[in-house]
Image (tube, rainbow over all chains, first blue to last red; front, side):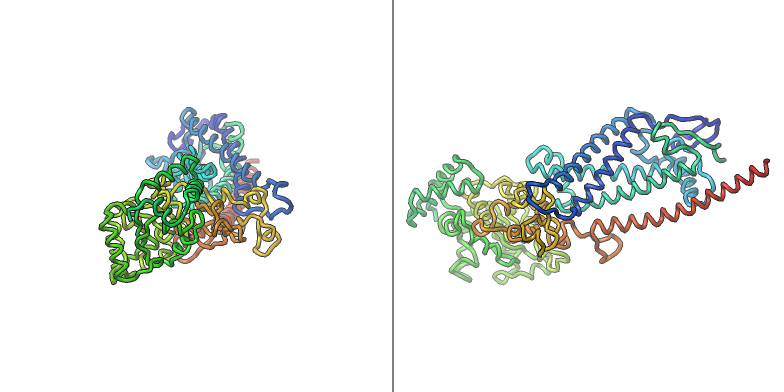
Length: 236
Length: 366
């Protein structure tokens, strides 16, 4: 099987299964998914708290728990992301694809145009892709990787704020408040970035199901067992 | 003027015992220990008083009003005994040329050794014509008085950040002091107004220790501005419990629940309100049932509603359209939802067609 190295387009057969996503990448994917669900739900409640509960304050710790789940999930997400970066260095070629967009490659731009026309229903069939198709790679980078990075940095800064000035946390993340002006702006942008991530997740899930049904390769299964299988011959 | 504080206080009939009590109280309010009280006593018995010149630019005098209500130390102690407040337009008995001469005399006599306290800020538009002092733009007077000062204290949000006169669109181009005087150390004491005890505390610290307090990254004294109002708020347990005031007249409001949902800015405001409180420690905004409006934070007028804890955002490209993060997020998500639904519908039709075509092909093959 011949594959164009930058875009991952299958040029010609004979088709064979490819091991795309190694175990650490798959594990990271599902851990991150769970974290994002937890973060999104609790984060929304931190912005708009649930209706007040009555009684004595010492009988309840609801908002404390919400914040604790949010912060724990956030820290897990950060650690998983760091491990993921390590694996981008150590793992295979596909482990790196969400960390860059090969804008310098003419082949990649050609492939992006092809996939774009297919997505707009101007081409009947898509090409076969070994890893991410070009649109997927670009949206993974711009929406997920940059979005997650922004959420992690602003989130850690807000976490640091609870520790207070003069702590190591604040030494490492105090610059975030200087960069965005004030804590309220950091909170607001962190909140806005949550919607950016929700938007990503929404489009991501739609595209994954659509491509699993309509493209020539396996998609959902690939994130389960790591293997991309092809269902038809590559398009001319 | 060169008397020590102690001599002056004794002359005013204050006993040594009261003097030492005062030193302990001041040390406690500055967060210093037992040794701090002794240091203060030592300094006040040996050091000549440092003169302070107090200028008022574009402002409302709320800082002065707050200052004279200081309880620990009492404002009268500060003004009459501790610092030599040589020039203050509102508090001085003298006025006009006589007062001006007083200031110039202090500057000449204590070159490089006096503190310039600035309340309000200079407007720079139209060559500074929006604030006139002795028939001259205030910014010129400020520069003149600042030239020989040891340090500058920016009183209140006006001098520290710009406050309401610098809020968008800032027609007079009101500019905070540190952006005009760039060659002197500037201590920001923000708040609208700042807490009285914070004001006198900062001055006491400078005068007794003869050095400037430790400042944070934004130039505020760490001893009063290193914690959020939220961190030591007495309503914090209600925050953690999830007990919030939903409306200002509901049962939660009467029970003193947390004001976060009605826009309290305590979690993003660095100030000492929840510990020092106001009016001799009587109360502070949250205690009186209203959320913190974040008056000691930069540009607090430009962040949208006082009753929303997030900043109101202007949507880029849509002039005048403002929204909250949630509104913007939901709008974009709804648009994406519509696009995805349309895309999915077309995809489904296409899939069905290609299936029919494949079936026809297989029919033909049969």
